Image (tube, rainbow, N blue to C red; front, side, top):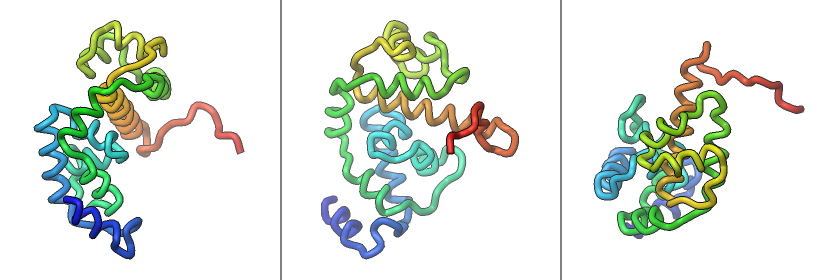
Length: 170
């Protein structure tokens, strides 16, 4: 696989070029099946948006192409790395921040526990911000969930735009 990364990276339009999505769709599904992680969480682990993960696995709009940069991010992951990194502990404050951004759309403790497959105690700590650390895989899934909720929120508002409660500072 390293020759594929090199050929992608050495291309003149690496940052803006597009490649066919089918091989990367298959790779994402393979990683998801082998690790048990949601494709959207794997996208987060690869540094991609959950929209790219959704488009690759066909949840919603199905993508025919993917940016070379995103493709190389996916190819940089393998099963062992994902399992190892996913089991490592990390700062849970990013999960709390992602949940806080949801405002009223944030799941309650019971819903979050079920959606992420974590204990109610862990879910409560994530919501309150009192949880100091969590497994990276839980963080990935939490960020992916928050992005999916924000996506659903954008679709639910008139015109497909997010409603902003306060004007942005100039």
